Length: 364
Image 1: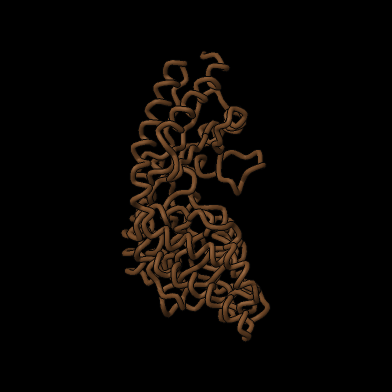
Image 2: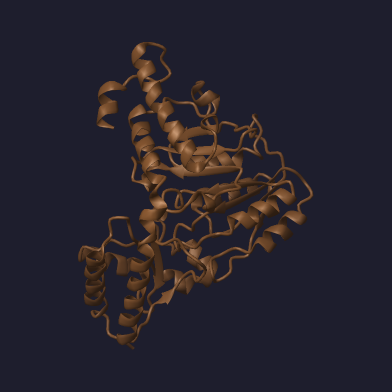
């Protein structure tokens, strides 16, 4: 990124030599992202992040150029990221029928429920929105099965792969008609993401302005951020192998924390019992408010979350855990995320901090 700032600082839409140098960086990043998600570079649109990519994907089939809606059916669930659920709620207010899927305690949706929802959908267009990996529990969603169901009903499938890209193989989102990714989840810079679509799908712009990104997303693409995104995307192609080892660390962490809680008379409860990505653990701690426990751990140098970072600062408990298991479980939920640099020594330190903090509250 420093090199791009020195040599490719110009506007990539400019035709002079410095603009062409910037454009080469942007297009190189586009090719790397396309290779990562296994789609064509021509069908990769740069965005400000995963949120804008999800907005583009969900609004595209239902909103006309004059901003009126077409009708049709959007199938999704309360397990999705706010950038999906909030757009679905907006579409619902504008007359699009939204079929909210059941949210089982396991955290994994049932493809049969998608099948039934689409079978009842008489009007077109039809879109299913599904995350590859849940952003709070790490639960893997049945993308391949849902893709098959969607095809049978003539529906499109959008997959939010923000939590999956760089951590799992492309099997996690293969079969999708559109895929959203974010650079910062690949250890790239914040503030840049992408929507990649299957060839033949037309993306409608949400913003109005210039002709950048083939008129699909106006505004100057930052070649410095794109350079970082490109490096991160190329590195992420081998991410699945690097993250596999975390499953063992995560399993050991959970076992030790459950045993610790049991000794203290308050064993935690695992949120999300379906197969999960290797880097996320979500536990509810009876007797604790999740945000209070997260704050207490933070003071001891261990950073965890009481919900999605997008909802940080709000008093509401996790909407995902509430949908799965109810408000009480959601209020006491804490998410622990492991990174590819996490070691057994770091896990030991975290467990020791958990014990110091948990011992401050007597058992009942």
